[in-house]
Structure formats: C-alpha cells, structure tokens
Amino acid sequence: MVKQTIMMMVDMMVIVVIVIGSLSHFKSSRV
Image 1 (cartoon, rainbow, N blue to C red):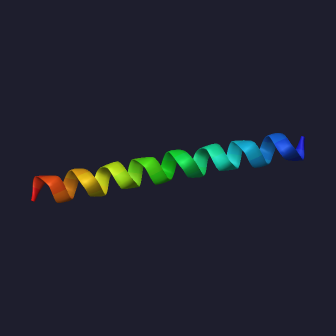
Image 2: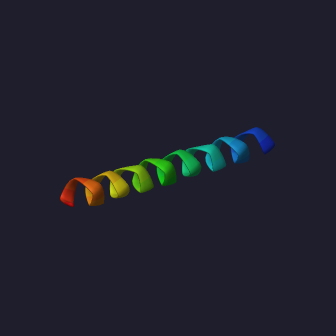
Image 3: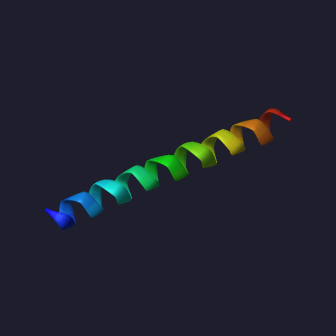
C-alpha cells in the first residue's frame, strides 16, 4: 500500500513539473 501511495505521489509530481515546464515555455515563447 505504501508503494502505491509513493507511486501516485511521484506521478502527481511529474505531471506538475510537466505542466509548469510547458506553461513557462509557452510564456517565454509568447514573449
């Protein structure tokens, strides 16, 4: 159960990093 929770947390972190990275890239490309 602990391993599943850690995997879910890692997935969320990866999604957040990708979203923030794409947003910053989009903003910089707009400018």
